[in-house]
Image (tube, rainbow, N blue to C red; front, side, top):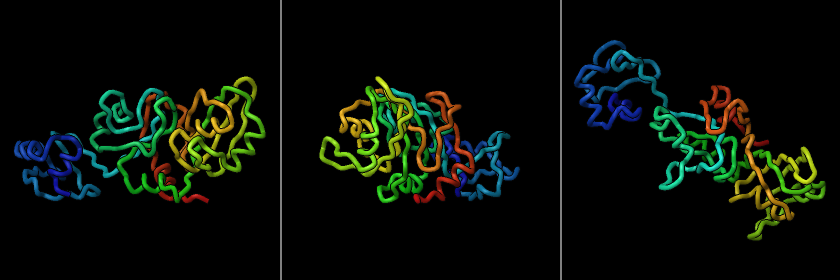
Length: 239
């Protein structure tokens, strides 16, 4: 990779600004000053420094966020804060995007990356990647609902969902449930409960494929995926 492209990609300025930076002699590759913007660098084997500080380059970034309510699962919006706005500038320079969407008022696991190939794999309807949600329902959820979900329910637009795995954790005037689905229709969990005459009052995604929400993350916090988590995502095959 050209040294000017690498530094520009990392947010050290435009190509023009990076060229000016190189002229100052502030950039070294393996302790040798580099001023030629066209010089190629092997980011895997060579060490690049800027003013003595090592510049780390990675092609892809993989982040797990515990999305807070009130924030959009989008890269930008004119009036509302997005999940990308919550990232540090050091992470924003990689131009990541959320993999799939969580409703504005929904919390929980959100994968943010710039790896388009992985995102496509996880979102492809053909892959049927399971997503599990914890929800609080405004009334009693019954075994009859469990059976209905296991067969698929008819949404308000006439669409019949694929079977969902509904588990009742606590029932009563309000019910706690977990629901695993393999689709991502608009407001799907809420609409599935509407189909059986019930309303979701709280919704949180807790897993997506092999990725589990890190419960130590406060709302709005995020962290990089571990190497094992990235490997599990890339190798994940729906059984």
